[in-house]
Amino acid sequence: MNELIEKLKKQFDEKLAEVSDENSLEKLRLDFLSKKGQISGLMKELAKVPNEKKKEYGQMINTFKQELTEQFDARREELLKKQEELLIRMTESYDESLPTGNPCGSYHPITLVQRELEDIFESMGFNVEDYNEIVDDYHCFEALNIPKFHPARDMQDTYYLTTPNQLLKSHTSAAQNAILKKYGPALKESGRPIRAVFPGRCFRNEAIDASHENTFFQMEGIMVDKDISVSNLIYFMKTMLSEVFGREVTVRLRPGFFPFVEPGFELDIKCLICGGSGCSSCKNSGWLELCPCGMIHPNVLKYGGINTEEDPYEYTGFAFGLGLTRLAMMKYGVGDIRAFNSGDLNVLSQFVSR
Ligand code: PHE
Image (cartoon, protein in one colour):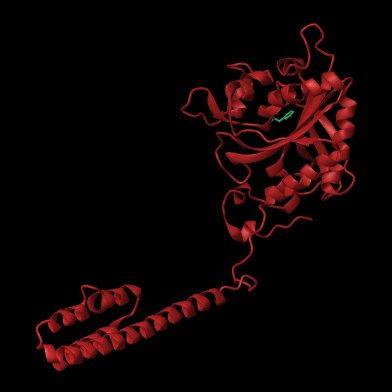
């Protein structure tokens, strides 16, 4: 019996030394200390020894079992402690207040310009509206007085989805109809003028070069009320642009054609760099072409549910389409439009709001 115990002890010690985790510890317990383990096996051997030896051997086995159990428990404690220490070390090594060494993100220049404009318009009582990038032919064209096969569609060739009648909007004007319908009732019921701006990503089938992109941003605005005229448009545009550029700007209007405005204009501002005497920024003309605009066409107001056939001029309004991407180029002096969609952080992380 002594020998047997010795042999088992040696085995146990060896295995215990190899134990490295909970699994191997459990295996050891099953092997030696469980009901079907080696110690229980020893108890079975006891049946074979002569009666007079039974007590002595029985005690030996019990003591042995106790020894192994103590060793086993000690080892388990040790393992648990190790695990805890590891856990503490892991949590200690994570300190969220420490600088990570990773550079901080920054806003895209177009986001900066967009937010700045939104603040300005909101301070003038405008609602900022969001609108889809995927629209249908009706909203992008028909509701804007651009019927099928109208030549004005040529300039706004865009991307058509395989889903019938779905396309990527070619200008933010695509939101006009929905916004007129949204705010029309309040205008008629309580005389609250419609004042809304709607920034958005636009798409056109465009050959890309330094000043043309197939994906760019605009911010459109409309104002509709009774007796809105071109003088309101001019005054408003001048005030708004002076705010945007942070100084007084001089504006001029030239005739421009867009089927959804009548009359339609191209609005220029006196070059902010040379003050009008001519420089490379304004191609020596003294003026910068900035923003198409005009009085909203009666058909557009009719389709938007604002006016009736009988009284097409009951309400009038103006619309303007600011090129956000162009504005960001001017504001930050970015010479190549491709920088904006490039994902090049060397370029894009340089801009901060004023
Ligand atoms: N939607 C026109 C364009 O993208 C711009 C515009 C907006 C013109 C509002 C007039 C009024 O070319």
